[in-house]
Length: 72
Image (cartoon, rainbow, N blue to C red):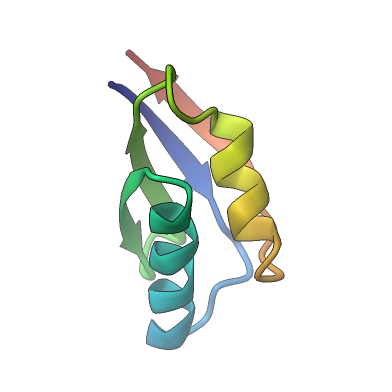
């Protein structure tokens, strides 16, 4: 499993958190979304899904996403 931290600067409420979690889960990843930090820590299996897949799923909901950090 790979972990990555994503900055999502334009989330503003708990509804945003729910939508972002839904987007992350829709591609088969797990995520912990923080409204206060405006980040999502995602964990995924790179054999099944790529970081780009996760980012694009979130972007489809209209959020701006930047990679803040990656680890193995």
